[in-house]
Image: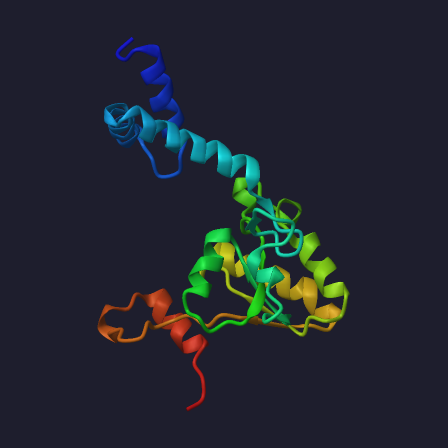
Length: 198
């Protein structure tokens, strides 16, 4: 064995993290072993603490320490407008804009038949329950402009339009300050498709 068993086990566990390959896992493991024991214990405690105390918000399915997350608990938010995102991290991206005052719904993925992810693996049933109350007037689908994201957006539109709710999709295309010369064909095509009147 190249490494002592505890070190090999640490490397193997770190390698399971998304975006961490064998070399990165080794670097992280060696870094952890060089840290003061108190720092390592705090890191371990924060991992177990987060895992044991964080669950799903009962309303939006985002991560929350309480029954309802801070956004869903905020009476100043507009409950008639829901922004549907693929992952909890996407909520933070939209919130950084400081413009959207509605609420969110987290799907925890996108439709991807090749990866075995169908409608039943996403939090779509919870979304339809939220709309059934009749207070929701618009769903803004904010999935990434990928094949999977677009497929998910179309599926949501087909699922929800019969319920009498307006379903919109974030526009995508040329970035602000972008140069036509450097735009790839798909981006340019999307910019034409989602053009708006001046």
